[in-house]
Length: 155
Image 1 (cartoon, rainbow, N blue to C red):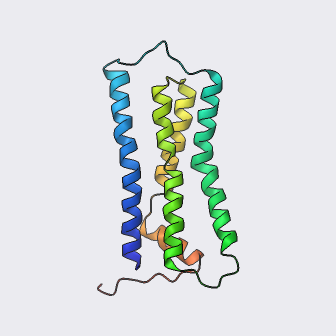
Image 2 (image 1 turned 135 degrees about the horizontal axis):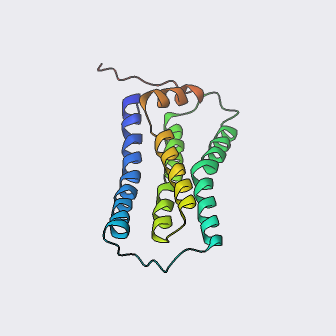
Image 3 (image 1 turned 30 degrees about the vertical axis):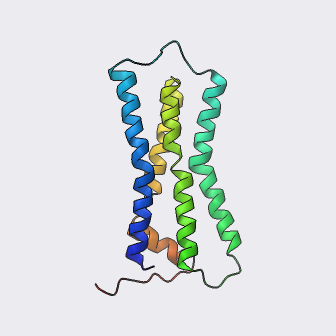
């Protein structure tokens, strides 16, 4: 798989996982704040709020770091890493990190307090920004993991 195909495939995965969350967030926002179709007496308790906020942060920030560390540990003795192994790693990393916006949906639907909503929103924005598979980022990570990027020969 050459570099342009890798970037294109990772972007496709990124958008296929992020766009449903954005659509669901827009629908939840419209239902709750514009059409006022939420049950205002149903408010998440403090324990639920803390658990959902913490799990959101762990899934968006800590798990990807631990998964990256595990991948580095797993390939530490190898001189060369295949592009398919790298692609599988990146796909799993994207899937894991992009679960965070779905926690924002849960927070909105459960009428969590504003602090929890802001924290989960920040986690979601961080994940959406940091894990976007740009060409420069993919090249950097391929070099970091000792993969020689194959450039498209047609250019």
